[in-house]
Image (cartoon, rainbow, N blue to C red; front, top):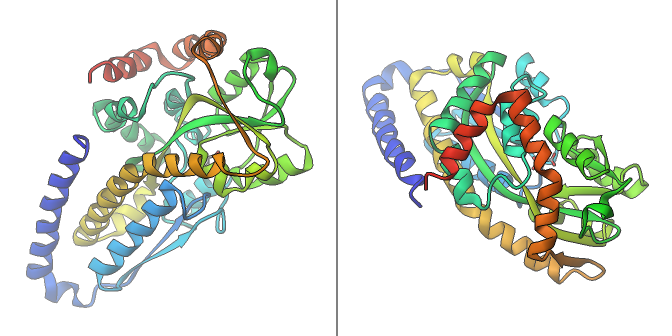
Length: 340
Ligand code: LMR
């Protein structure tokens, strides 16, 4: 995959640097203090993010000889997505991988460009943005909020679930739909006549079970691993929006690492992200195949005209983002998409 070539070159260079520093600086590092890196996220291990985190942990443990310990906390077991950014600021966790939708609430609304409905046709288009100059610029903007952006990871495209099929804009009218804390996602649901209800990911299943919300949008791997098929008997393959992540840390933690440790962690993360990005499409396909075989669940494919009607209804959300957050950013993203 072309996007991985630069990072594997970078990895090779970094490995050399780590090896060189380890050789030259071995005596100085002999008494180097242990490092604890707590990595909290909200999804199951059997997802692109869960697998990326496991690979990262294995690589760091293998290369750091046990001195750098990565503790993984999946499934919101340490922090949920409503308090993880605050935990990062307070030094109660060292690494997170929030979805891009969650950075608007953290003060960087430009990230909500990734939430715009029907902006990307496929992951190749997403990668032209995340793995290029626009993506780098976005990660740099996180510094405004004392967040250090380390890289992007894909999950996939979201599908809509409910207790009935959602084929036309009318089918959404009056539904209470769980959304992530993103202005764009709220606008998207309002444009369809639905009521957006912002809830942490970890509360979605309970909210669907108790009827607090009627519907949700998720990529197949999250829908499957959260057990939502038992609660939402209709999954409509709308493919209307992208879900991906940025792996982040706090600048204070990052700068507290020695140069060698930082290179080791950065290198391991670049490899783990490449692994997660490679897996994303396969896990998506596998999850869909499992869902197709799930008793009691019906999948609905949309025809071209149905998809077009949905896209037309959602068009004002894209225009509104251009006006409120930045027409320039939107143009840059569209240009990057079209540049392949
Ligand atoms: C969500 O809240 O729906 C997602 O961001 C969860 C995740 O991290 O994939």
